[in-house]
Image (cartoon, rainbow, N blue to C red; front, side):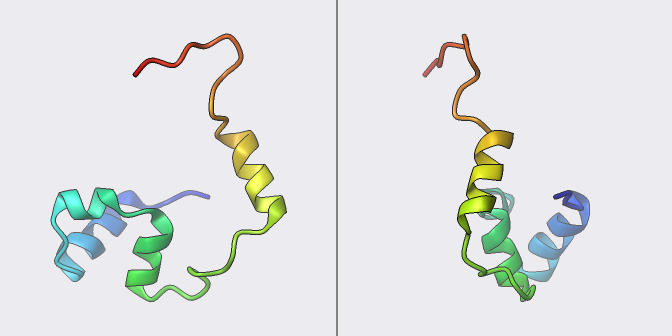
Length: 67
């Protein structure tokens, strides 16, 4: 899914009156819900969860995590 970040930032900062810190602290789903986008609160199904896990793995094989 692609996001129009410039457009979303305009809506969040100007339309909703969020500060930049508030805007960036939101998840895309939270922002869509605040903007009144239909389907923003649809539950996450198993298939979509697995798709996201493949697209954004917790760690890449052989890569060490630094904290």
